[in-house]
Length: 134
Length: 146
Figure 1 (spheres, each protein chain N blue to C red):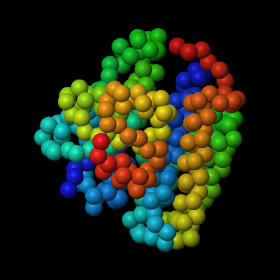
Figure 2 (cartoon, chains in turn red, cyan):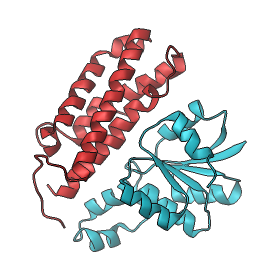
Figure 3 (tube, rainbow over the protein chains, first blue to last red):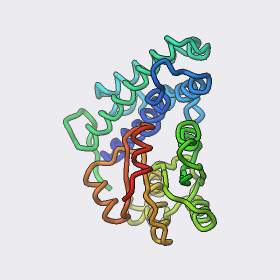
Figure 4 (cartoon, chains in turn blue, green):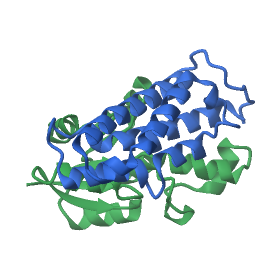
């Protein structure tokens, strides 16, 4: 894999997963969940551009083949997304404590993926495989 | 009321804008450069909100020549060239809009590195970027005067 492909995958994770899972979570005032906002959060997590956020994450950076899976930020985001997946029934029932908890987790996913993208882009030490530039 | 043109290949930005910005802006939407240009020529638009990655856009809708990009940057690899054009499509669309004479402030929701941001401003004038969907910060970025 080219190094530029690894950077591209990390950037795609930050854009296609991190940014969108936190789209609603960041902007809900405390105690201010409305059905419209709750529905949008559910879409951010389980119908993110037509897929579940965890599916998008694993499609862009599969555990078995992506060099990104060696980074701790990948593991953090993966674990949080699995936790969010398990919360789906409570979120679809618009249970307020679950919505607030999910929003906090979503923001942590975003942070982990921004850190991963930044680490890969600036060439900080990582364990990715090196590739020849085209 | 100011008029905001959202340019994206999906509907996530527009959905966000309609939910969080409607009280501040009249929202217009375009899904490719040609539609954005048509909108700018027919409507008053005060500010642009542009997605960067157009990974769902088909080749025919993209700004940029896949074959030429493949030859110039990717040793003839069309697949990588297509991905590159999709990844940078928001900036390529902005370049088209600037070339057509539209200088409105443009805002991206993307974490550009500082050097890239400086370069974008040097090339395209009033360009701003936010790393996240942050309604308050986005409103400030959209409403500031350059």
